[in-house]
Image (cartoon, rainbow, N blue to C red):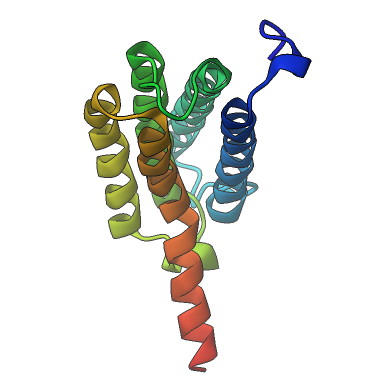
Length: 169
């Protein structure tokens, strides 16, 4: 927005900017809900190495998504999202979800892991990668919806499962 000037921002760019902020919030939420502050399940060297490397890759993927979100303020709803940024964002999100999955296997059991299972992770990864191949052919609004679905599925499905389970108890 600093390049365009805050006073020249169109509504579609402002909405895209808000989508980016919400995306970062959701990524933090799913991290802390599923793996944040959890201890490794044992003290084996292999477990600690996986825990450390998965966190390193998770943070790298988070940075990739942040860089891709920078393009949000450069495009309107009806323009295609830049392919270079789409690659960084889609594969960054797929990697972020995959690293959450890897971390869930090397940390102590958490209640949230009962609801954020492998099928939720696979759905998000596949949708994020598929989004990369769709983005050049659709307006950024459609690409954002697909990418956002991949991300939001990581919190929406587990919340629905938890709500359903505890409602029936």
